[in-house]
Every structure is written in C-alpha cells, then in structure tokens.
Image 1 (cartoon, rainbow, N blue to C red):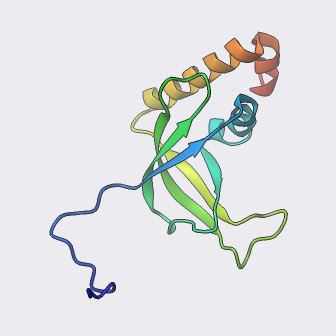
Image 2 (image 1 turned 45 degrees about the vertical axis):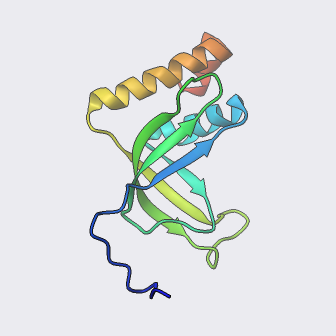
Amino acid sequence: MSDVADDRRDTPRDPIELKVEYKRLNTFFADYTRNISRGGTFIRTDKPLELGTEFVFALSVPQLGEPVRLVGRVQWVTTTADATADKPAGMGIRFVYKSDDERVAVEREVERLMHAELGEHLSGKLLGRR
C-alpha cells in the first residue's frame, strides 16, 4: 500500500476544471445579472477549494453549443461549519481575464443571448440599462 501523505509526482498535476451546469436559462440569467457581470460568481459546495486557487470555470448554458470557459480564482470561502440558511457553504469566485478584450467578448456573448431570449426591453432592465 502506498502512503497517501507521500504524494510526490514526476510531472505536475493537470489544472482543475469545474463545471457548473444551468438546466434552465432563467437561472443562468439571474446569476449573470447578480454576479457574473460583476466579474465573479458563487459556487455552492460543501468542499470548497483553498483560497487563491486558480482553475478553469466552465459554464454550461442552454442554447450555447459550447460551455463558456473562464479562469477563476477563489476569493472567499464559507465552510459547512460557518454556513447558515442565509449564507450557504461554498466559495466566491473572481474571474481572471487575460485581457479587457476577453472580458468584453464574454459579456457581449451572454448579453446577445439574453437579448435573443428575453427581448431588448426585459434584458435591458435586467442588465441595468433602461
């Protein structure tokens, strides 16, 4: 039997990739307007990653052929011991964009989807644009 504590490798581990799936488009839109458009989101989990961990964050959204892949960094954690009904266990994620162009491209794609599904008026209200 190998000693689990003795976890040495000759090659580095693969990067972490988390997948968050949205079954309903409205759930994604609600998260987007509350969190994602501000540069981050919250992942509810009993097993959060360590503070500062960077990982690939894949958002699977209905009506998009491919998941939206972003780099995220764990900014804060609520453990199960500290969790309450109003503050569930999980981790706050800050998106890390390679450039402003990448951030703008992601935002434009999601906003395009919102306009197509909800119409100009409703999507404009949700995005804070009258």
